[in-house]
Image 1 (cartoon, rainbow, N blue to C red):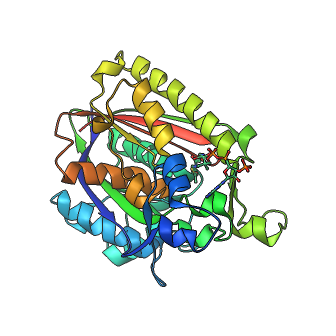
Image 2: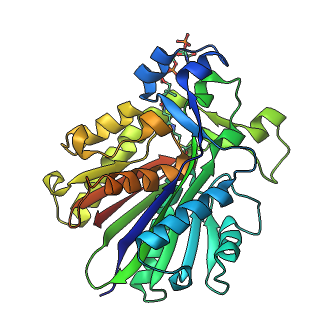
Image 3: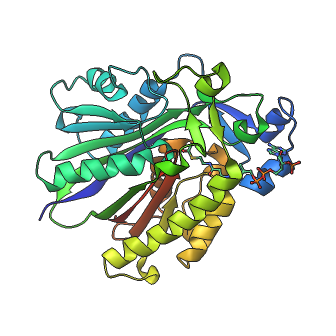
Amino acid sequence: MTYACIKGTGGYLPEKVLTNFDLEKMVDTTDQWIVERTGIHRRHIAAVGETALSMAEQAAQIAIADAGLEARDVGLIIVATTTPEKMFPSTACLLQQRLQIAGCPAFDLNSAACAGFIYALAVADQFIRNNTVKNALVIGSEVMSKVLDWNDRSTCILFGDGAGAVVLGASDSPGIVSTHLHADGTHKDVLSLGIGLGKPLAVEEALYLKMSGNQLFKLAVKRLGDLFDETLAANGLDRSSVDWLIPHQANIRIIQAMAKKLNLPLERVAITLQDQGNTSSASIPLALDKAIREKKIKRGDRLMLESFGGGLAWGSALIKY
Ligand code: ACO
């Protein structure tokens, strides 16, 4: 059997930081409201000229070096992003050109919103398990600041920009133990970003992320709770076998509910949202990278990754690090 294991990680955050106090000057909100309802204190915002591509490149270079590899060792690039450089060429192809590794498959996965990284990880896992590629670069990169209505206090306080990257490599032991993906289009209106070539939309709907936060909150808690049960049952494990939770960084109250479900103290949860907000598909690889670099997560630890986003789309990955 061939498995995909994590060989290296990398992350990139733009230099500019926007605090809750800065937001107080922009919309009718307070630091207290944002901290109490979300857990977020600040977030990074891309500079003019910084894009999903430029951030992905930074994170990728770090992850490749961390894996002890050269760019030419990468046999597959998948970039999860809902804020791509262009419709096409894909951000992944543009990155491949920058890395000067023409020839390997490279594509974006832009259809699973905040669950994009887990979806991308699951796809790369299949390529490696099938012995189609040896090393895969899986990235989440987002400039959420460009799709926010900065007059809408219910959404603009939640998100940030950044990129996280993971290099997966073939191994004869896990690695990625299992991945579990789901979607439910009946909830298509709970979270959406209208940009596209469908029927004409009002400018507001087309350009900005729209969300029914309260509804999404309840759906996320229910779906992710069920997903943990499914993931553990598929592997004949119980919740005491999980060492670390690496959750999507949307809201501290959702993360707390998920930690409780797994019976994990918050010290065993990778949390970055206080400093980064919700970076959509970048949030999991950024949290993973930080916890590894801080030497909290150790080789052999069992990790539960989970995320949910527009679609709805949601998924988990159980990983032996
Ligand atoms: N500052 C002050 N007041 C605010 C703000 C703000 N920034 N935003 C909303 N309010 C007000 C509302 O207008 C409302 O006022 P009202 O009672 O007078 O009508 C009140 O606060 C409560 O609003 P709710 O939306 O009910 O607040 P809630 O406790 O649900 O928190 C939040 C809102 C933080 C958005 C929460 O619902 C949440 O985190 N939901 C999940 C969001 C999420 O997971 N997003 C992930 C997206 S993943 C992806 O794919 C991009």
